[in-house]
Image (cartoon, rainbow, N blue to C red; front, side, top):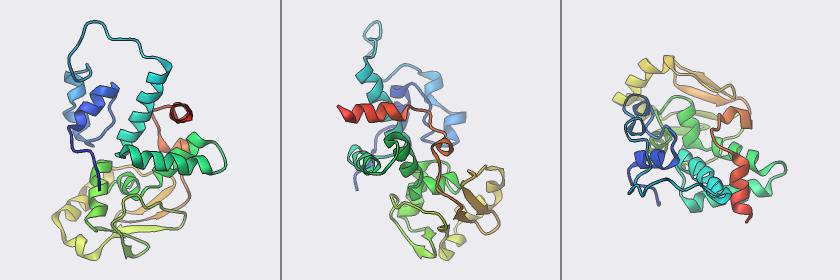
Length: 207
């Protein structure tokens, strides 16, 4: 499976915004705070972005934020476009329903990348079944929990002690003693806490 293997801090510098790609490290040791300029040679005064450039930047922000490659993101957009309603909002909801994102939202991981790793390594079960498909979409009534064998790991034991201080979205319910959760409802665009313009993404692909 293709994935980005470069320095993620460069992505934050490129977008001029913290994308929280390293979880808590983005708060305590953020490269953007020390080097706010975009990567690469600085050739005098920065050029003014066109409307197309702003659309591209917003598209890249959401793609990098959720950790998707371009082909994966295009498929998600195509699926959102086929659904009834507003395409931009449909896209946000689809991305929020990804299993790796849900694992991150529940506080099982410090970042979406770590959540994806937990899923790919088979530590997470969906409705009692082990799954290693990070792009799997959860639906209302689904249960997410840890595999019994994974509950013996040091990471799980540390998580039990630290998860109390983490917040959970209203569309998810979590039992912090057993580290199991349930999807109470599908997320809304407001639940995504998006820091980008979804309509700009639609505009980018509409050309």
